[in-house]
Image 1 (tube, rainbow, N blue to C red):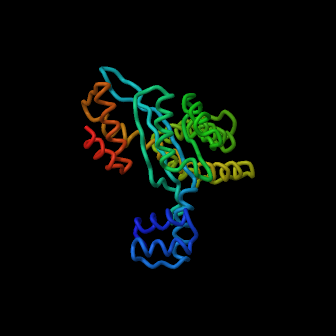
Image 2 (tube, helix red, strand yellow):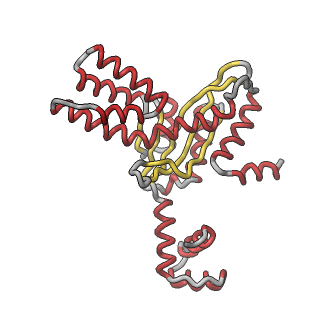
Image 3 (cartoon, one colour):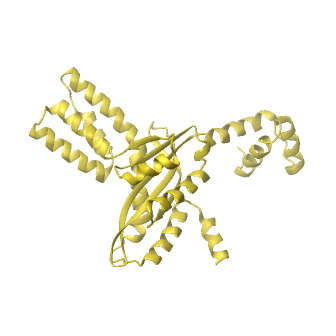
Length: 276
């Protein structure tokens, strides 16, 4: 197991010269004697991560600023990594948040995405709700990305499933769909997934509908959670405490620091302090 410093140095050198030359230079610079095969494995590990799938999520939440409720645009950039339980989780998350125009926020978020390696990713996914500003930014900054609507489109799936399972226009089906749309917004897909697994379809149409939506909402867990969490972690937990009221300037200042801290970019805060 090699330290991050050794891995980074090995990859940087190997990216500029042959493996044979790399191991010789590494030994001269650091005194470490690595086999070519070790450097190759390091390059494979880091290179694979650089070309992993990057996900960009955007949403809007609100905070009490200058005596009224104002929208705060929030974004998150992360990698989806499959855990031992088979569920994809967000890792290496980076956050941004600001009360500004969609165009300015899109530029801000794109800088963070570029720092995360979005330009080198094999695949880029953009996740958002039905807001037009989100999809305009997605088309502008990430034209080749896969676009996923994680709530309104999901509710369409829920209503289609309710129709297939309970029948067209039935009271039970409507109530089931309305409840699960509301819970999806509040809790994420977990409650719905448990309900789907408890269903006992009797017809081929019902079985196919349940199978299809199980697949859809299992995949949706990758995307909806981190975007909602970004609003809660960056904005909600800091700006929405009991009795909190903010000026526009004060809110922007704390949002910048909060986004840096939850992104584990403490050095950015230290750099700000040195520059002040």
